[in-house]
Image (cartoon, rainbow, N blue to C red; front, side, top):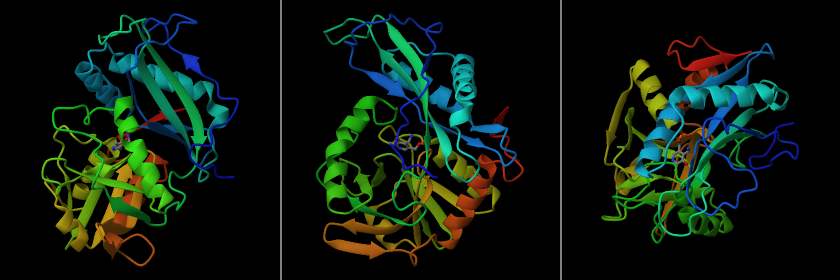
Amino acid sequence: GVLNYGQVMDSIVCKDFSRFLTLKRNLLVLSDFGLFEGMKAYRKQDGKNILLFRPEENATRMRNGAERMCMPAPTIEQFVEAVKATVLANKRWIPPPGKGSLYIRPLLMGTGAVLGLAPAPEYTFLVYVSPVGNYFKEGVAPINLIVENEFHRATPGGTGGVKTIGNYAAVLKAQSIAKAKGYSDVLYLDCVYKRFLEEVSSCNIFIIKDNVISTPEIKGTILPGITRKSIIDVARTQGLQVEERNVTVDELLEADEVFCTGTAVVVSPVGSITYKDKRVSYGEGSFGPVSEKLYTVLTSLQMGLSEDNMNWTVNLS
Ligand code: PMP
């Protein structure tokens, strides 16, 4: 059947890539910083071929993050080779077409014995995988978000624009409070004016108004999502207008359609937004027409159901 997200199988094979960077076995991990990536592999309809999606983009993002965090990083070639090798070594865990995907987690962390605040003397790069189903329990049904007023995930000048583990530590509390109240996740605002949209805990946000698609521009406090970038390109090739700019919470509440993008969430429609004591609903319990089109074009390409005109997929067999 389709797995729930976070339901990790016992017998995951973890392959280390110590030949790329130093790994000392049995070493106590004393440095407390790390960077990671999230990717997915899909099994094609033929059951044999496997598709990766833009792996060099993840490699580049990890390299950019490593630069921000004073860490060395694998080259793009090393990163992609490690991902391909790990996926192929775990081929049997890739769900059949339509039943989910293999989530891939490349992780780069300081593993040197450092107690003080300093770049670690040694690093480990490893890749692990797990079969996954849908990220939200709603599946592809619309999710319900609450706009966060107290907590922030990123500050200007901080590390919000890179995929460091610390960013996720910052969101756990807000997310668990929201989930306890029945919301799917939290939407963050900028922490200076508290009126511009940033992103959700693990995905980017888009609004559609009068067929114009808008999403917050990348300026250091949100993660430059690879799905975000791909959806912008897909939308433009469909002849749609896309604006990357400051988007206010008022515009969000007036939007025709709202959706989130990310490797884990793919394209998820937003069914309602709660802001202070106001709740606004979108659509009728399903995708809006524009976001559904974008979802279909992107996922068909990722799963190998349509011609890859964008040259984004990497075929493994
Ligand atoms: N924002 C955050 C905070 C995320 O964790 C993710 C998931 N990596 C995204 C956005 C979406 O990025 P991508 O499309 O590359 O998965």
